[in-house]
Structures are given as structure tokens and as C-alpha cells.
Length: 333
Ligand code: FES
Image (cartoon, rainbow, N blue to C red; front, side, top):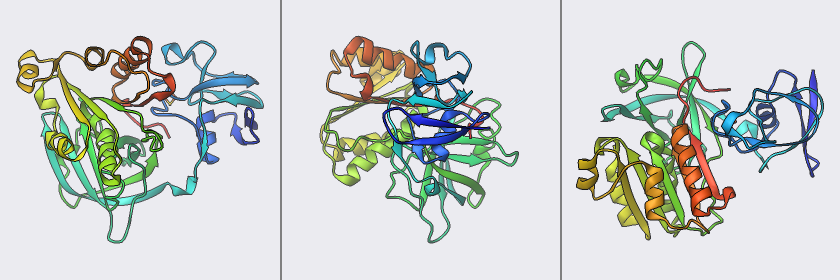
């Protein structure tokens, strides 16, 4: 049975089946609300319910009291919802491509950089920071951010961390030039707020570097001048697996500052960086984040810790914290 879901204070409404979550139904209807993991972990989709009843598991720490995770909630009748943001999208803009591997590099002991090429004449349309889904033979999917900027639209660069026992990641190192993958894109709304001139603080852990690389390469391409600080965290210096990109931004992005944050003390000293976690690096380097925008990507505990440090301890406007949370395993569809 389908119910009517209305966005409070607007004329916008969409149908949502009783077995469908509110976020999926909105996206299908061409209405995008904030989201990242679609698995009830990141909290990005949290919003209010002004009228009606929903069925959903307890959100735990992912949502404030009184807020609901729209990626987990099923309607029990007609609803009026209060998302933190929404805008119209074209659902038909998402496309499936057969792409060929043309380069596969082991960039760190547990990270592959996979370069994919579209067929001649094809172009992938996406915004810097968005992600794609790789379709696996068993029908499941995995999500990876594009690391290349949108103007390089005939290629797709993915940074893939090898997850022990991961169904896809354990075959990634064996992929060779000419192998074909099926991908669908774009997904996600981790995007640069281009209309803003606020200083940017990018905080990434491991392969959380990928979407921020796309954002910063896009800034360079568009000639956008903003102060940018990048804090990139890893266990050791090997985890900061694409330093040539960082060195390039030092030359091409005016006002760019790089802070490596590694847990290995000797490597931190050798890099002239911060010894410890990225959230502590944020505390050490920023006494106030008032007026900043923060772009944060990585594993759920890291993003949660950075969010807390930025908002609760350094005065960041909560509406200016943008995150992409990497949750391993099959992608939600
Ligand atoms: S918790 Fe809903 S998108 Fe992450």
C-alpha cells in the first residue's frame, strides 16, 4: 500500500510504499534529501516528522532525540516530514555503464587505485564528491567515491581499501587492464558548496581522501579561490598513499595548508605532521571553526569524533558540517 509523504511547509509530496523507506521513495520521486550511508549509521538523513506514524529501528547515537533516520523509516500512513534540506533532482540522470579497467595500482599495502575508462564517446556526469556503485555478479553492489574531478568525464578513478574477506575488495588486486565492470552513477550529495567563500577544513581518514581529491581538483579546475586546510589521517605515512596530489595542490591552490596526522610517532615527526588522531589534529590546529565549512570523509567513528570536535568544541555551525561516511559491505539500493 502506498502512502502520501509531504514535505512540511511545501507543496512537494511523493508516494511511499509501506515496505519502502522514506529516503528511497523521495529519491525515486526526484527529491533529494541529505544522506550518505543509507544503512542507519551516519545520521545524515535524520529529520523530523510533523504528522503521521513511522516504523523504524531505534536510531541510537545516529540521530538526536525526536529525529528519525529517513533511510530506515517505513510509513504507517500518510506523513508530513521535516528534512534538514531538500532539492529536486532528475532521477533519469543516473546511468549504468560498462567500463574497462585501464590501470590498477597498489598505492598502499591495503589500497588499490583503480582507473576505469568509459566506452568511446560516453561521458559520466557527476558532481565532485559523489559516488558510484559497482554491480557484482551476485547482484549485490559496493559504493566508491569518484576521486577524479567531473571534467575528466571519460574516466573514473576509485580508491579501494582492501577489507579482509571483502567479496569485492579481495579480487580488486587481481583486476587487470581490459577487465570489465558494471557501474551506476551518480549517487550522494557530499558536494562542494560553490556559492560559499567560507574557509574549508577537509578532514579525511584513509581512502576518505578520494571524494575530497575530487573536490579539490574541481576547485583548481574552476579557479575557485578559498582557504583550504586538509587534514589527512592514517596509521603511518604509507597510509597517505597519494602525496603527489597534495604536492600539486600546494602549487595550484592559493591558501592551501596540509596537515598529515599519523599514529606512528616516527612517521609523524618525519612528515612534520601531527602525531595522533584527526579529531585531535582539528583541536590542535583550530581554536575556532566559526565561519568555516568542514568536509569530512572516512569511517563512522572517525567522522563522529570529528563532528563532535568541530561542533561541540570549536563552534562550527552544524549546518556547515558535510560528511561522507564509509560503511563497508553491500550498498543499500
Ligand atoms: S543513517 Fe541514513 S543515510 Fe546514513
